[in-house]
Length: 380
Image (cartoon, rainbow, N blue to C red; front, side, top):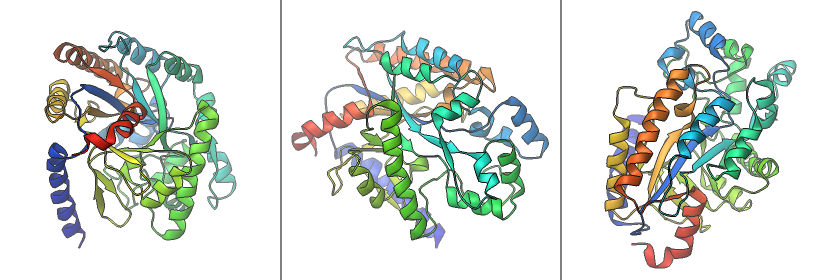
């Protein structure tokens, strides 16, 4: 049954790629949006824990997120900002990262003290204080410089109920990770049969769905407390969210949903979208159509691939929305990851401004607002 569903999802996905060519919000403007996920969330704490995990027989070297990804250091931000500041669009504005942010992480001590029966969290700004060379000042510097624009990605990048259940059931791998201050062991490298922990809104029953959507609404308020404004857009961890999530977030004035062509649902099904499509709440879907993930496949020509995707988007009179992840800009564990990828990113931005001198760099919120204000005459 699941194989049939996967085939159906694949066919629908190809169909919606075709539909996006002819339907949706269209513009002659050359708009670039860079959407980057996972900011604020913990992953691998440091190089020492990485080496300990390998010695334990957990192949974190086989997953880019487990090998390279961690909370961005001050050096990571400095290097990223230096690249962004080198470029400007037709309006004299630099490229801006729409930084999709997880606002909280597990409070490991409280969870352990409660014998894994209850979940507790801490704000990501408090997590930063416990990690060396991490300063919230660097976030604010990027925001004030127009280089870094946070938006909401969720409360935590963690399926809380699955995690606690696995810990109570004495998962060897997850307990080792817990004792070393992290949770993110990918299913692709795990030797255990645990369900995905990263899909925070992939619920196993309706009770957990209600709690999870309440957590997302809470995250919107936490986001406002941290940054001083409410997020206008949202992207569900691992592309999972539901219509209940959308209703919870309209109460927090979230009007735009980032994602790919496919929105994943907890029942194994998918809902497909096109650029500028509206739901029953008049919330707008933004569909990513360019991929830039150099940490995931190190031998791929990511600059040429991204430029082809951008050219295709512009030929269809669509904004080019680049999908990337924090991991591509992180050098705290392996510095060469950041150095190599930022060089490619720098070359990509240079090529964009040379090939399309009329280009405009926008945030997801700015693009959503533009679509909203021009939706009547621009939807095919």
